[in-house]
Image 1 (cartoon, rainbow, N blue to C red):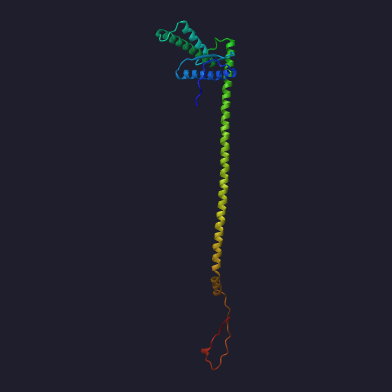
Image 2: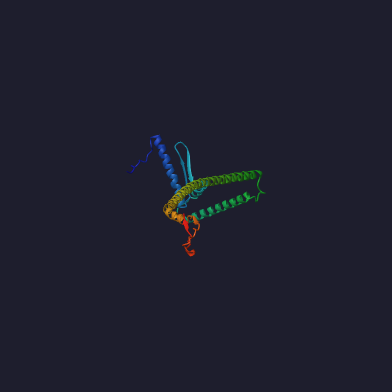
Length: 239
């Protein structure tokens, strides 16, 4: 269900007025920022609350926006005036050229070049700026190192957990391997026992066949006269 239209007039309730101001102010500044980014426009917004607080937004800098506004208002700027646009562009180019020269000079000074023309105060300011830059760089590096250490600790914990899981799997495999070995040994013992159960009769027969025999040579019997010498028999007795 859509919201009803709000009458454009002063809100009597102080709390509602403050809430509405906060919401609409944030929306206005957001739209100004989006306009400057999407359309490459130079935008400046200045807002004073009913309590006197200042809220502003500038796409480049508020000072440059105000200077440009003053210059154009002083010249009686009119839309679609090519000559005025050319002059404005020339001033912008000159201003950008000066800013570029200033930045290049500042860069050379930060690199330790062209310091002869600086005063002691300028040198102190340059030193402070370098110290602040170094502190900022160190803080960024420390933050990056801390983030890397945390990430490595997390990876180490994950690897430790994976190692524990692998040890558990290896222990389980060893237990299963031992169980299979026991089963194989039991099956082998059963097979050997079955072989021993079927072999005794054969072993007995072999034992009987190869049992030592007691052979005794009988004494020759006295020969009778009636029995011829060729008929003498040697008696072998098997006990």
